[in-house]
Length: 297
Image (tube, rainbow, N blue to C red; front, side):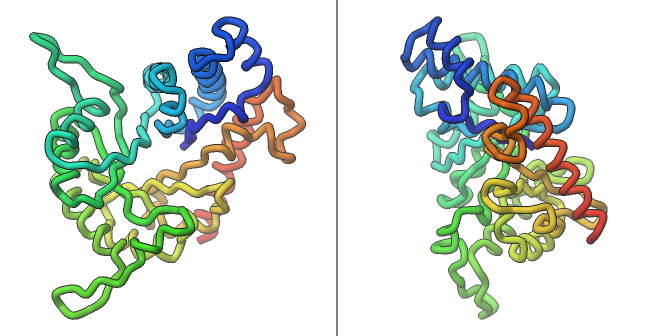
């Protein structure tokens, strides 16, 4: 999966020039540059991957114009037949959670009409507030046949400050918090089953392969979204335990390792002008790395 997490420093100068010529060095100009950049990358890779994951913060930094670029990106990717996972990491309760769920996955009622807002297929959700924060999303997922990825064990270095804390359970055992959250994801997912997997998945970082091995057993019917491949240090060999024995059940994300591939020495031969071709080459290399690791396990 390709993470569409654009920063202006990743966008080649010829795209900056085109966007700024039309809209100036403004928020609208920046958003146009992001949109043009995304479009070329999607055109180059959509036949190689099943899904994309735009991270909404990268668009929100440009205000309303950035959110328009986010919406255009989501719609374009869906037109290309890609599954869109909105990386929004929302976590709230009550009517606020309902509004987030409706805005990103469902339809909002306007008089006698109902409209999709951003219309992603899946979104990421922070479970820190408990079931009150997650259930409104699950309700909309059931109505719309869409899904969630719940944060369980994230790839960042300080994730262990909370997620690794040992919790004393009713049976007297001490277990890390991420395992307890994983069990809750499996429970939520049991009520939202597809043919083989639940529509309620989990986010588990590639940077913690041993924990991924444990969580795969805790959540056998959940898709695991695995960030942290590539730029954050995850490799194909680290990922095998995130998959089930049949080689299914995990979706591996790489963001800047793909979208900014042309800035890496390995792909520098493509140059700025051919940045999308460099991204395609990076996707092919990633697929090969993962396939090789799975065949060797």
